[in-house]
Image 1 (cartoon, rainbow, N blue to C red):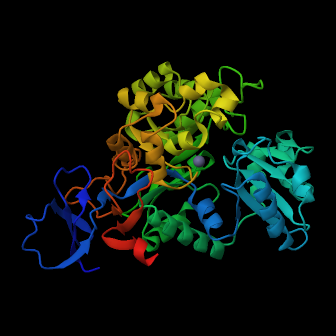
Image 2: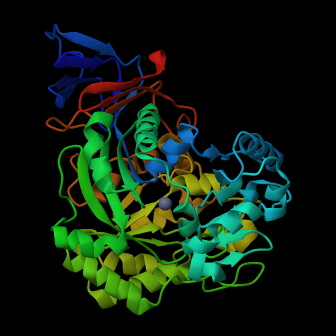
Image 3: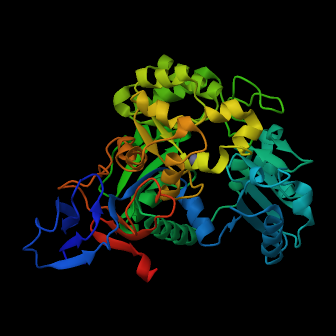
Length: 498
Ligand SMILES: [Zn+2]
């Protein structure tokens, strides 16, 4: 692209009557209509009558995992039926040497009938002699083959209470321990990040908040500029002390990479049956809190003191209340924009408390598309009433809580999330189109302490832009596709050349 060009013949989001944007040196220079730019003689990019939006900001991704699946290093089971899953595992296992690891991710029995989880017996029946690890879509549960259980015994060590050898089911920290044995090398990581960035661009994502997990965020720091994807790295809370020692605070970084916050977990997930609720699941049990309140409070206080934002995963109402009490006791500071991730089942009083504590929430609209509604996972696990009150986007916005959307990679796709929020299965989940788009742009930008983009189409902003193939309204959200994506004024995706 030349240093200055005009994107014209579009409908500029949020600016009535505007149909063109002038980009100069990677920034938005002006927004207007044909008349505003009458004298412009430089290069023109035809938006084909489609919507021009700010680049999407996905506030919760697992970029490396998505990339590893994208480039085939892990076996992607997302969307497969049970028999397809077993077939795919069989083919991949047969292609591996005896004792070699096979990591598969994304199975979801809530979409199978009957909806029974994958079992060790099934994995033992697939061909070959690979060590099979099949991680459930939520990442909180994995099923291992007999060979894999044997190979992982030492790594699991003292976490063996999280393992059920009969079913091959492994939970929470024990999953992490198993995965520590199945790590890609540096070259594979590079390939995976490139694949994930291309995928993001194709979906209109120009900024991704990355839950970096075991990956050293400095790898992301080094690569972000080359990937043309703005990255915000959130690291496990175990590294709070290390970051504090190095003097790394939330918001540090440059135009392409920022240090985010530290990630904590208060509970598990509904699908893994360990999200913590006040009332039991339909089959009994109320799930499980991951730590005592004192421990959570101390972790929050330590991060706050080190000027680090916190992001605490909390799904069930009991876990959410637990996190709020811990924040209150830790006296965390609102200016650090501490976040609660997922926030799927808050009661009304928890929504009010979030507001009064000055916290923000990062929610996943795609979850209602995936799991809410008649016959879905939420209803099957918790009953219709709790499903109907799940993911109360409307109440969150009405309470004045800063809301940003993220996909959690299930799947990566802002447009799917936006479509889920404007046409959800339950009334309390419904947002207007402007609200849903804002949560995936400006709202998501507001969740980070010092992001290098505001997620808005205004002069002076970085030219992170998406052009859709049509006018965007509630009815077209589900079918709209990305035509062009620009990051910092550079064309990073074009549907016609893809
Ligand atoms: Zn996540």
